[in-house]
Amino acid sequence: MSNHHVAVVGGGVIGLSVAWRAAAAGHRVTVVDPAPGRGASWVAGGMLAPLAEAWPGEEAALALGEESLNRWPEFAQALAADGGNPGLSQAGTVVVALDRADADQLDIQAAYLRSVGREVEQVTGRSLRSLEPGLGAVRGGLLVPGDLAVDNRKLLRSLETAALRHGAEFTGDRAVAVQPGCVRTAHCEVRCDAVVVAAGARSAELHPVLARGVRPLKGEILRLRARRTSLPPPTRTVRAVVEGRPVYLVPREDGELVLGATQYEAGFDETVSAKGVRELIEAAERIFPSVGEYELTETAAGLRSASADTLPFIGDLGDGVLAATGHHRNGLLMAPVTADAVLAWLAGEKPPEEALAADPARLETGGV
Image 1 (cartoon, rainbow, N blue to C red):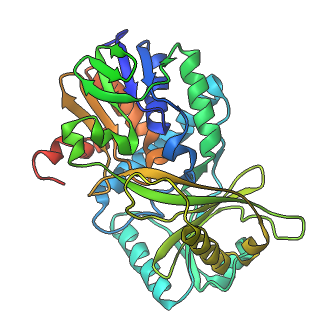
Image 2 (cartoon, helix red, strand yellow):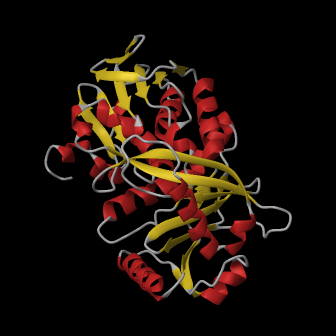
Image 3 (cartoon, one colour):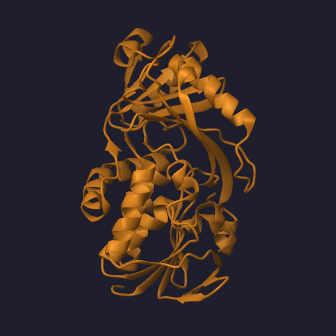
């Protein structure tokens, strides 16, 4: 299928990536979203870190994430030419342990990664503090130099600009129903040849198959800025688990620090709780004590589109409807491979091998 009309439902990082790639490939593209470039993608941390998030039993997600990570440099280069610099960082990630229990968890993670043929470097707390002087009394950690990060807001603006440059149209409406060859909104019908459901946590409302597999998972993030009297942000992404809760600190080129993320079931509630803010700041101060002196510039919450097995749903739902949703914490990471897989299906070609495990058919066969 080429030079056909493709309706992309959802204007987050996945929907915009698909829209850009499809429009650049010569398809007529309509993006159906009331606020493209917002939603969960707008409040993401920006980590592109399949190894730092790897855990036993999630091999298919690791393979898909790594394949997408490999595509990121070309993706970012092409996007910079079409829509502007997306703010890709190659500084890498450190994963830190605060106590013996945390260190034991990192030992398990490191052993697992070695067992599946990936290497990370285990280092002492002293070595970590020589790399990142602002770290607190951490016991040790892992260096993951191959993981990347991206400025999510620069990325979203670049994707929208690139899609528009190639002729994509934006409706400004929310989809209320998806049917073969048609997307219905409150104000119009978008007739098309193919529909791509990339509406994040809202995807479950648009297709009966996805209703069984996608749910919202709330996450809160903070944005902070160093003061003249405080230490600057770390140069790398810093990840840790503090009292069982994951926390990350992601530096931005402009001196901001993104701090996240809480994670809990709250339906479609997107308010920020005082408890969430307190927990994030307290956890971050234990890792990087100077955070307590930073200016708090923003609090926000977003709804990840979670799946039960941590894999997204990428593939054919039948009758010209494709899924590109359920990416959980990894929407930004998996945007390149997801867009390429959708483009392959639109062209009648085989998608990347690693994307086959994300086939939504597993929802109907009991694979989730």
